[in-house]
Length: 270
Image (cartoon, rainbow, N blue to C red; front, side, top):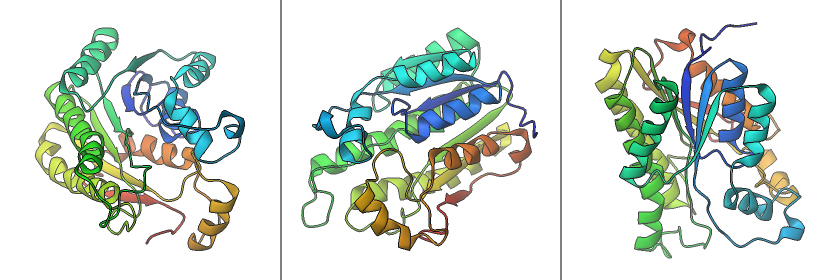
């Protein structure tokens, strides 16, 4: 078994209230390595049909994102891990500071930051013909500004160990139909490279993980049939696939990997 050197390290993971999501899987993966985890989330209320929310699809995904992190918390309790859960909005600078105040107040340090929280538009207005200022502003407020403010606060409060992992998407460079969302993720990839160059002297690494089609509760049977032919490995990516990559990038073994965008996509969108 590989020792990733993460025992007693403190990791902040944003966007962790979906029990089927990447944030939750990442929290569990860090907990299994003996790390302490700080989970943040913001409830995103969207309409859904509760009768259909037990099956994979939009209703299940929307219900999960509208809820709290209690299911994830139960899993952490089962693992006996030391953890903290915070309901905070990372697009608000004051709340970003509150996250770090709480984490450092509880654990004394923060070693790893996983910028997983993101939002997109579900109204069909994220195309060049339908785009609105509201869609652009709401998308960039979380995906770019929020992640950037979390990163800046992490660097300001740095200790003797530093790993920052940003979540992009494998289609960031070409995302027709979701142009603001794709652009926000491409921006995050650019920030990954730039910030890596600035903070390398502190021993901090900055990398991005770009998932392909991942089963976070969103992909129903019909969508899965449409997507699978586009994935050379012929299977959906699982949240644990992303979490395992994040844990590696946070590890001692990855100390000289920085400024990279790593696609975990089964060959999708190469």
